[in-house]
Length: 85
Image 1 (cartoon, rainbow, N blue to C red):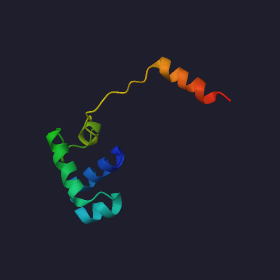
Image 2 (image 1 turned 45 degrees about the vertical axis):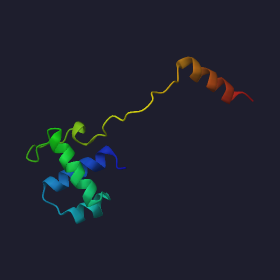
Image 3 (image 1 turned 180 degrees about the horizontal axis):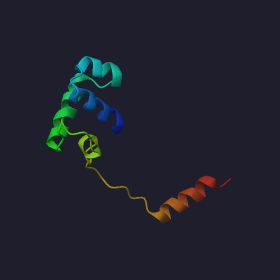
Image 4 (image 1 turned 180 degrees about the vertical axis):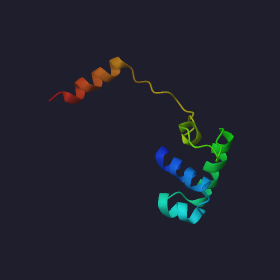
């Protein structure tokens, strides 16, 4: 998994015409992952001729799953138990 800044860098390099192998060497992002990133960015409104890359082009999509059951009360209780000698 690559952070948002690295994905934005890879997207910028690709939009400048840098070969996928060179982008992999610089960022560590594999060509297949780069293709997926490129397609996802386009589907989110990316324009390679525009001067900026928005976070929404490269950020992770929301993941499904069970929400956390942690409440402020539970957090306080856990902190109290952990800090107990």
